[in-house]
Length: 144
Image (cartoon, rainbow, N blue to C red; front, side, top):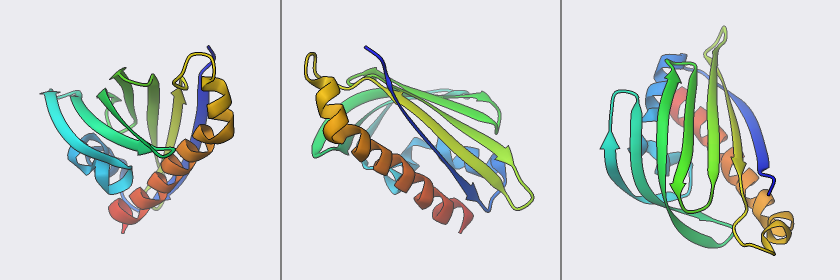
C-alpha cells in the first residue's frame, strides 16, 4: 500500500539549536500535537523511544515511537514502532531571523480494505490539520 504524505513549513524566531532541543524533548509533544500519556522507554544522546496516545480523526490510538537526531540541529527523524505506520522528518534551516522548520510525514492508513477510503474521506485532512497546527504552535512557543 502506498503511504500518504503530508508536508508543511513555518518560520520560527529562534535558532536551529533551540528549536532542535525543544523538538527532541518528548515531554514537549503535548504542547504542539494531540499527544498524551507519554511513557519513556529508552533515552540516549541521539534520541528516545517512548509510548504515547495520539488523538486524530476522532480516534485515540496508542503507539510506540522512536525519535532521533540524525544531523545535529538540522534533521530529526521519527517513526512508529507499534501501531499505525508513521515516518517523519523535521528539517531545520537557519535564516536571518531564526529557523525555517519543515515537516514531512508519511503514514499508512489503518484498516485493510477500507483504509484508503477512510484516509480519503477524513484521515488525511485531519492529520494535515494536526501537523500544520502543530507547526504554528511551535512557532509561537519556541519563537515567542
